[in-house]
Picture: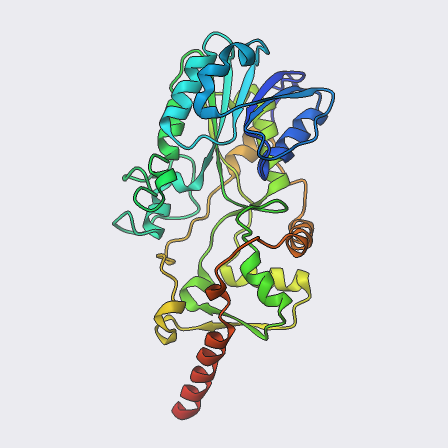
Length: 354
């Protein structure tokens, strides 16, 4: 296994971070600041972040980036991290503003670039994609995966973001494709649907058989931030795409069970054949397609390793979720009476069949 040579590593850089104040961003900021880099954060001011001596900020809207060109370029960033690129024009504008000023760009992308993701969401047709997925495997053939579903995301497409980021001859690009990220400050509260039931002392959690066996790569937020920092500090990352993910793959059933073990939940997971579930309880995604990726490349090329174990990661996430439940959620997602009725019907059906 090869790791980066010391000559490949760059320290003490001037780094501009677009975003950087929400969920993953603060962990990246703290990791890079602690390593001695000088940081400039450009963000809207919606989320506050404590500034160290080697950090400063400029408040503004990235949609108006050219208006801040003089102020941002006066910092002379060697490298730019774009934490929040969602559309092609975001990166086109960024490259234009910093042409002749910066030499490297790192953009945060997603596993939703892969064709497997389109198969899961039924926007792609054809046979299942083999897993684990490497950086050279098939991407979606249909662009704009959320068009018509969310007006704010009509022009969202990480595939186009990646293409532009890697196309510049003057600013060398790096792409990180992130997994499902969990941890403190997760605004999507990915553990909440299970933890809420465990906190409410539900005796069972209901999963359809297909969903129970579905696998999706995860990554704990602090570990993901470490991957970002390694890609920043290593010149070998230039021009490269890296998958970031844990090296093991939970089924959904195993994921819920592991959360329950860390929470000391005394209930059980009830796996039910899909055709025995009412329509409202059936998983709408094509769960026979897994979305697990191979992170061998970033481990081999950049020496990436998780700095936080999965046990500690889940403990920290559970503690945060306990203290920070989502401000609003759909109460229909916790219709315990309906779940109990499903269980009673299953018991009755099996007694009759016996």
